[in-house]
Amino acid sequence: MAVAAARVASSDFDPFSSETRRNPYAAYERLRAAGPVVRLTRYDIWAVPGFAEVKSVLEDHANFSSAGGAGLANYFKQKPWRPPSIILEADPPLHTRTRAVLARVLSPGVMRRLADEFKARAVTLIDPLVEAGSFDAIRDIAEVFPISVFPDALGIDQEGRENFLTYGAMVFAGFGPENDYFRELMAKAATVLPWVAAKCQRQALRPGSFGAQIYQAVDAGEISEEEGALLVRSLLSAGLDTTISAIGMSLYSLARAPAQWAVLAGNPTLARSAFDETLRYDSAAPFVFRTTPHETVIAGVPIDGHEKILLLVASANRDATRWERADELDITRRVSGHVGFGVGIHGCVGQMVARLEAEAVLSALAARVSRIEITGDVAYRESTGLRALSCLPLRVIPK
Ligand code: OVP
Image 1: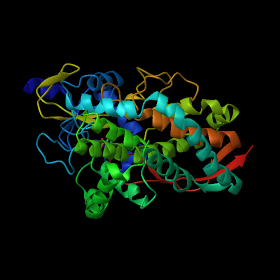
Image 2: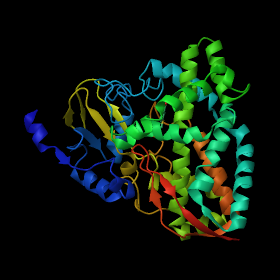
Image 3: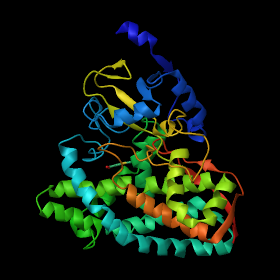
Image 4: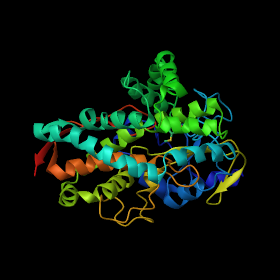
């Protein structure tokens, strides 16, 4: 063991620093060159930067558990900051039961019924912004659209929706270290967490909504009443800050690539694959963790039990051994197979909703706008679990 350990690469790379958020890709390239598994000395965790290994770890839930936590915290050793998610932070057989419920609620048939509504609401949001000619794509689009359409689909009323931004920030701070950013957000836990819990109760959810369908699974005996509330919580935790951040990053990637925007403006039906390519190229959700329940190996490297494994999905999506011209945004490439939504039994159950929201926004803009220019400074949020912008000032040139 000692001999093998000595041969393994190590790095002082910090996945949670503001420098990394600004530009992680040079560091990812160094990590991929260093080896299939790299010891990160700052946190005493393993990092996996290459496509093949990220994919094979994600596909091996028996050796790489989610019950140990999907963030940096090791639930095999530490108390979680909130009752763990019964889908994200769970292994089979619990995960199999809860996943079946959400997979049914978010099925392709349901998505087809939502598509027209989402597209109409994106046009209503975007058209006045195009008329105005300039706006902040984060404040005026990314932070508005998901908060308007997704809680509606979930069946939640309008009251207090600004709390979702704080809650989302808390959830994704919970993926990183217990730093000042985490503690500042947790100071709001006493008011925000009970508010969220109340929105997850059966009586708070409109008949016919996603939320009501989760409680139908309670009535059918598949899950308990408490599990029903926790699955509504999962949709609120996973379904807002992710899509807000992804829509923001997608617009940022496209704004930096005028030739790609021109292709999209020429054919707005490319919006869906353009979104996937931006997820591959520069993702808002750059990593996820697994925890080893027992000793195992990754690419021949022995790994102890109860170790945290950082899967750098954004690095995998730039791996030149998997992607041609990996560092180029190309909205016409064959992008299926990217791991931006994960893969395996925990692959994003809401990815169809995310695609529908992003497609609605991108196609509404592409239908009206021939060119996009970034007119001022761009800033990243402090979030440790997501890579997201806090502002993106744009000028748009109508067709
Ligand atoms: C990206 C995700 C993220 C955060 C929370 C949960 C899921 C949850 O299930 O609570 S998936």
